[in-house]
Amino acid sequence: MRRLPIVTHSGPDASLRLDFAAKLRESGHSTLRATGVDVLQVNVGKLCNQRCRHCHVDAGPDRHEVMSPALIERCLEVLREGQIGTLDITGGAPELNPSYPRLVEGAFALGCHIMTRCNLTVLELPRFRGLARFFAEHRVEVVSSLPHYGALNTDRQRGEGVFEKSIRALKRLNAEGYADGRSGLRLALVTNPVGAFLPGDQEALESHWRERLWRDHGIVFDALYCITNMPVGRYLDWLGESGNLETYLAELVQAYNPRAVDGLMCRKTLSVSWDGQLYDCDFNQMLTLPLRGVSTGLMDVEVARLKNREIAVGPHCFGCTAGAGSSCGGVTVTTAV
Amino acid sequence: MSHYYDDKELSNFGDIKANAPELGGKFFEWYGAVFQGGALTAREKSLIALGVAHAIQCPYCIDSFTKDCLRKGADMDEMTEVVHVSAAIRAGASLVHGMQMRERAEKLSM
Picture 1 (cartoon, chains in turn brown, cyan):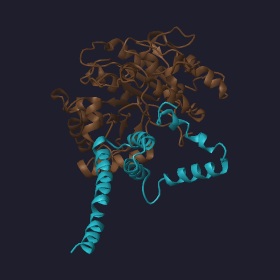
Picture 2: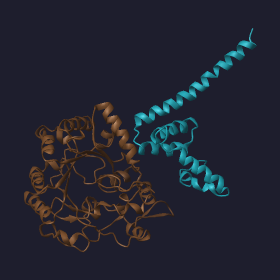
Picture 3: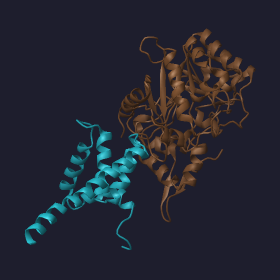
Picture 4: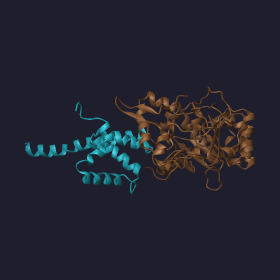
């Protein structure tokens, strides 16, 4: 997958520096280090029933890379051996991996908090009609992509007809007790900007999403996470094709917020790829930017040795430190620059 | 200067404080406060600003508030309706002056 250079040209006589390591040093962070391994984020494959225009994984129906049953079992061992409290499952559409139920059941038996990144439309596939019940039975926190409360922007990013299916799926999750305020079953929505701009204020957007989804569809949810689009994968290609690349990168650099560094999710996460390689985050995984100074993979990993590792950084990291910060759980600081 | 409008001028807007820093500072402080959420949400204010930007036909403001509205979760349906509101007020303002024309013409005519 294409990587950004550290210096890019923004005009005949100007250049834009994307040197994240230098920016860290300027703001008083000598090196970026992990503070623990609280979350095992497992990308179980690139197969997806959708083909979203912004996908950093380049996932789609034509991708066949999925994690093997043996590696799924090893993920469960690592959760147990490393005493990692949270399993964060992603893809692709992770549910399309035949071993997905085994991963969830195994982690549930270990007492882990389980999060699954769900594209919603998978719940509408005939063979997954029992999926919402399965999530509920295993107390899975569902983190669902819904870029907008309306069809127009949702379908522009995620494909024609996705919004309508997503609404049906959300109703299905609500019917199982998700976000009802009593069951404890948590449903979070995720919005990425549908274009070349940074997300707005998460609290204000959540309030508006809540009002519109309830008014228009009777849907409830627990939280809205605003995630900055990383200049990686399909989104990076789109930035280039649409003539927005330089402006967007400049905006990311300009919006660098040193206060967002402490909350970066790479500092407490270990990311596993479908083929059992280890990375600091899902974006490094897609860029095949390996762990620094550590050659182990999933099969021979000792989690304790990775709890204070140095994080590998690159130009794309400006995406996670822009404005109020960005992570798979939304913003990382309460106020932007 | 080969042309009157350049998008880079928008990002350099802060330079207007040069030569009159106190006045410029007051403007930017007030401007920032205006767009905070209050009785109206920040989102509502941004949509109003987009409408006004079209009414006064300011390309800088259209650029700035188009992006701001998108960041605040507005979609093209909403933003297009805003432009129609703006256009309707402009058109209505012209048309309602027709009443002045009519009154004047009535007085002058036999």
